[in-house]
Length: 162
Image (cartoon, rainbow, N blue to C red; front, side, top):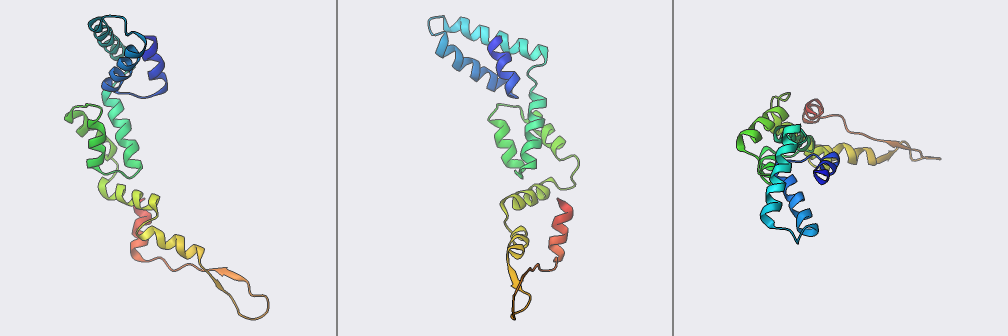
C-alpha cells in the first residue's frame, strides 16, 4: 500500500497504470514470493486505493483529455492515448465531451493551438514579419524600423479562436 500511495502522490494514474507499476515493483523486489499471492495483493491494493478515492479513472481521463486538448491534440489522438491506459470507451467519450464543453468546434480549436505552438500555417507569418526589418531611410544614420504586415481576415479569425 505504501508504494501505491507514494506513486499516486507523485503522479495521476489509472487503475491499469497503477497495476503495472506495482507489478514491476513486485517482480524486482518480491521475486521469492508466490506470484498468485502477489497478484492478489496487487488487486487488493488497487481496490483499496479506488475505495479511498486515490485512483479515479473518470477524473484521470478528464484531466488527460483536457491537457491533450490544450496541447492541440486531435480527438483521435486523445482517444488512442487514453486507450493505452485500458479505459472504457464510455469513460473516454465522457472525458472528450468535458474537454470540449466550452468550444463550439474542439477539433478546430485544437488544430489552431497546435499550429500556433508549432509556428506553422498562418502563425509563421507574424513571426517572420516581426523578425524582418526595413530601413526607415538610406541616408546618414539609417535606423531599422520593425515592419509588420497588416492582419489578414484569416489571421484575425485565428486570434479570436485561441
